Image (cartoon, rainbow, N blue to C red; front, side, top):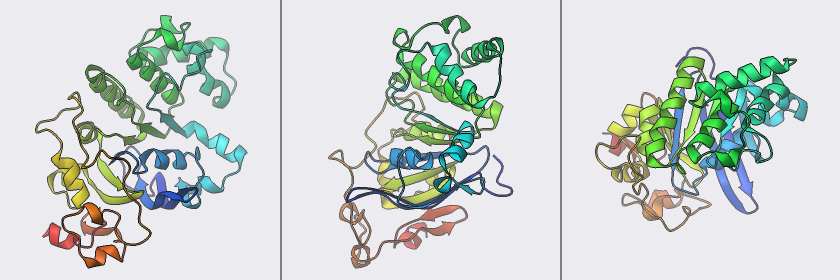
Length: 319
């Protein structure tokens, strides 16, 4: 990870509304070249919306997404198309993200046909074959269709398609949550190997905190469309500050590893977190709430080097 110079990606006050519902309420963070940032939070907290807003797959109402200093939200279609080779995503449902009418070889070759200029058919096939081998599949599978593969194999194909262009940023949106526990660790280790070889930065979204801990340099914690804590991995797991983060971590089984089965990691399975126009959105579920929490939204403040928390009582908890 290289934190010298400017960040690769800078998100500034990003806001996304769906009709009257605010899905993202002023999210800001940086991501550096070669860094893996884990993004965690309850279902409905805005994680996938953030991923899609960064790539302009959903429309943001306000804010900026600075990619190497250039605002993606201000780019026209042609400019955005030229930048997409460096910005790739792996989706949760690997099979649904693949075109059922295209062979896997055609799906993996498609980004090259669009972005890599004039390559001969032989060069294309060679690149695809190498990529299939790199993700643990066989080049002989190029002519098969997605429905002929298992879920784990489809996810490897999705990763191959995303990485064939050697992007600078890979966003992984719950890439292992739908896979068997025995396969999850294999996919995570594959992503780590590819990142090590290519230097690609990664935003990794997951409910599984054991996996996030295994591969992340820093971790972002979301609640109700806002970031409530940002910290280096060891600081977050060693000294979580925000009450919501503490609740999430308290549900992780002791000694969890990336291949461990999913266990409940949220305080409430009753639906998305509530949204409030004013104050702290977490206040009704927080044992430490005070009157100020109902009237004023807490800003992100640095309580230790690189450790940011949005809580009015964060200084007390950090003491």
